[in-house]
Length: 199
Image 1 (cartoon, rainbow, N blue to C red):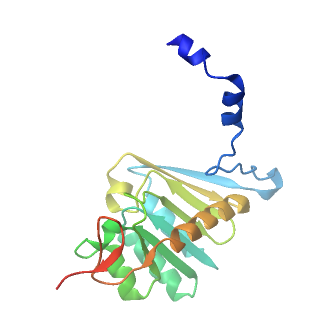
Image 2 (image 1 turned 60 degrees about the vertical axis):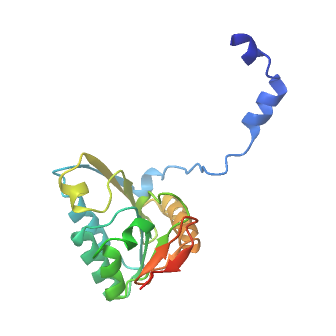
């Protein structure tokens, strides 16, 4: 086996290592005078959903949130209230949310909160939010009651880090572009194209 490894031409190996990384980005840490902070939450017991809701309550311009599974009434209510304050609230959820009997997708639709469903991937597994120009939150925790109160999870809120917010904002916009606006009764076939639910 070792001789097979040695038979790979060094130039070919170097060329492979020189290929640009398409899906990664190096983001500089904020300067000390930016006073950036990182709040780290470990569930259960950290009231992570309430911390996320409080961050949303402080939003002035935007709250963009991408989530795989979303059942947290605490976070949903905070998003609804931000939307009522004319904050630019946008939500992208995984397609699994359209099959729930009464999901957050239904709630957001009924409240007029802009919502897209992403069916581009087998699972759209993101769990992040971007607030205003410099606050970002992400971690293992889904936006669910179980994620906040029962499961062993983590979630992190980074404040005063505009470069990181820009990066996550671009990813949110990319997800939004490849998603479909939610409508009641929408379904997805095996090829992930949206279709109408049969009566």
